[in-house]
Length: 286
Image 1 (cartoon, rainbow, N blue to C red):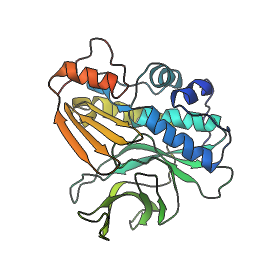
Image 2 (cartoon, rainbow, N blue to C red):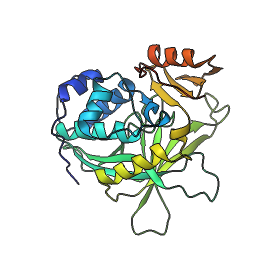
Image 3 (cartoon, one colour):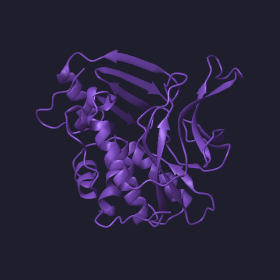
């Protein structure tokens, strides 16, 4: 696997930011724990692209923004930062690119624009798929082994990884999230699995994501350049803000939705509830 330098990362500051303390070892248990702590500790947000700025993926800039600056970021920022931290802890990391299929219409072929990674722990022969930047309620809370049919009960979520048929030379993997069918809970109903994205094990490098990041941040058809998105995971719920629509999904499956009154309320919510330090003078579109 590619071992990019993580020199310059203040690992102590990063671990403090996500509220994690423990034995610094490249084990599967540490990987799961750090992965979950990162997801709960650093919110997902696209304030830079929606304000017309391309986020920097340089490690010092990511540290200044996500670790010390009270900000979050989207997949390229989140996973670049996690990859650097994992390498500093002794893990081997390979960057991958996925094609998001969630919400795609039949026949749609989307580009591979989502960043994730394959991580090898010292005490496990099979690498893990790790991803703290998907920014949705179907996102991983803990990594999943790269094994056909592997499942993780990353409570309150469940995920499954499967190989799917295709014509390419490399195996195609699909990450799925459990989505209980109506009336399934407590009634023995069938469980649905919802596909999130597909990917191969082909390694991608940092310059690849520099190009993809620029495209996603600047293309006028990109959702991230046109509308505000923010996600925050708490121990009890998943909070999602799209424009000025807030959705709170509890771990028990409860769902509340409401429309924010104006930009001032949006800024207050991002600051007080999501824990995001909104840049002064930011204009947030609906």
